[in-house]
Length: 105
Image (cartoon, rainbow, N blue to C red; front, side):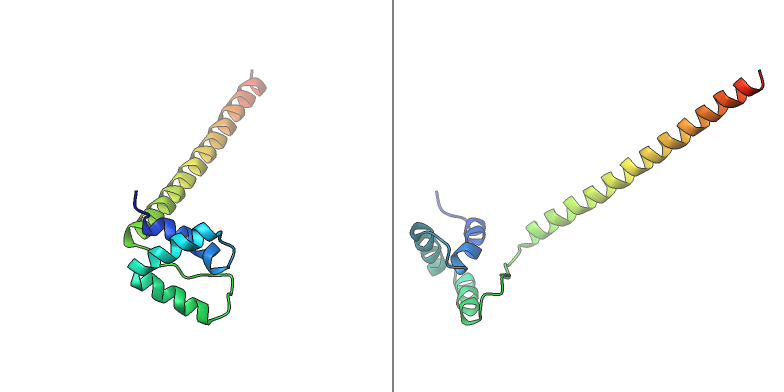
């Protein structure tokens, strides 16, 4: 099974930090021979001191998937909050109705 670019991107921070095993180093270096864009990024990042943050290219598909998940989370949060507010309002109305009926009986 060929190694995908996403797997290499997952391993790249460990590789750049110098914490990768020998097998991982070999795997990343072999992949970089076939991906010149990523190899250029690695070369450039090696020229500057490691700042703890590595810029990773994100595909449009990954970016759109993240956006959809964020939108879904926002909608879910709004619906749950609205449901909770409606439940509290309905509960207060029921309690008030029961108390009014009890007082005027």
